[in-house]
Length: 225
Image (cartoon, rainbow, N blue to C red; front, side):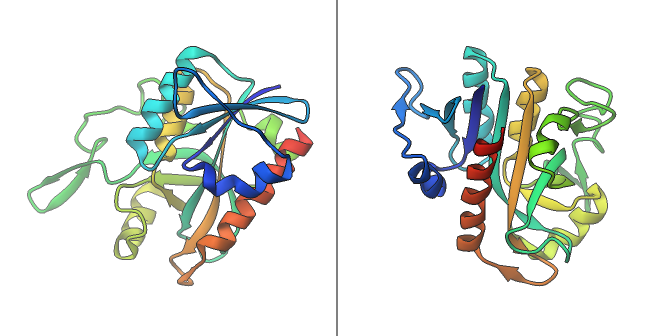
């Protein structure tokens, strides 16, 4: 199976790489793309860097070169619900754009409110950026399906309730939509798993524990699929 694994920084998956004694081969033309043979898989690793703009640009460049049996994004998120505790693994099946828009008078309007994008236009599916290609992976990784909202001001506790209400979201990421949008547009099968590093309701946070879990699930997935 040919896989693409997207992470913001390779240092976040050092335990995973050490477990399989991975020797990364750098791509000759794309400095952020690496390849390796792991078990019976051919795996490309895309180190996106931080932010939606880097994720979107680099993923688009890679998918322009080739398609994969599956693209997997492993990232972090902030939880909007009490029962989604630190180290919980969430399967983000619906990505929404959050604080992208403009102030109109004293009111905040997002891109949908401003009619600058339409839920009827591609790559929207059923009115959203929805991943319908989850059946296969759910057999191996039956994680909780959630709605994620991509935000610029990540970790801003004072705004999470309004985001939760407006977008019916369960969690927030910094770049989830940059991944999902490109995969949907290119008809690339994908899977986005996000590990909770902060829970706004319980006020718990632990990046190190989330990173340990991130490596554990990546190891588990590669051994199962």
